[in-house]
Image (tube, rainbow, N blue to C red):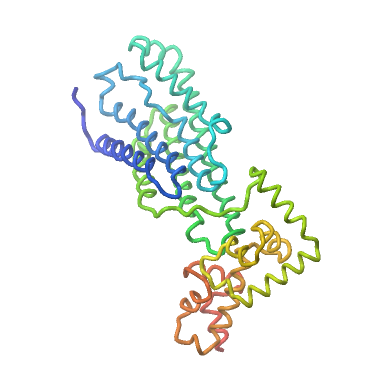
Length: 379
């Protein structure tokens, strides 16, 4: 068998091999995101498997070995569910994947696999007949359209999960840098753009027999390499502490009961006690302060404390803590004892843990940047 190598199929072959290796490494990567890694590892491996079909096509392998047509190497129906459950495992760690409850997501994947197993085991004559009579006109267009709909539906749901998660962590964290998953949100946006270009080109090719960018060849290959490399080289994602979800019925009943015990008088008294202790103990100076840490100091259940902050004080935990940090910065920046420190040095002493976070929060609460604030106070 002779393989015609050129730049495109060499890149494809490298990415297939590299993507498969990355998929296996991610699948077996053991850290705080091990359950999520299994879904991502399979996602990367499935993309690599799908690229094998492109490699066989442009390398003339199919023409030399027609029996390889319609082998079970097509896994496009798995892209959406695997990506979604990777994101779901990171953003909702308290709701793990369960085959009985969530296995229906992979029913189309199983059907696609069985479909190509049957065709792959058939003779070339049978495959050729099925292609001309049915697949070309009916099953292939359906497969392509369902692939597009499924992937973008799951990708949109994944983006929504990340945004929902980013709102939830403000109720339990006063710092977001290590748990915000903003890198994942950007990654999903890039995937959306990449596959939108590929799918547009696939339809242009189908209806006009024209490849404007050859995106179907190189964009998925680059995506496989980039996605796997990004995850493998990142530090382990910290497992976020989130408030119990509505699915956690036991915690929900307990937490609902605890909040119902707080009448208006108790709520007001607890709110005042919290603010007094926060000012006296200066817990906000801890740059990694979490709601669970504060609940231990106050000797209150996490859900009850969250209720006090949200309802009694009227703020999220994130805003509640960072308000004190901004006020402390405003006090210290006027004092001679801190004159030897830069603005960022004073900010770090007040509990902030990054320049970007400090600048963003300070401007949110004061309306000006820290440097402008300092100049105005001097004048």
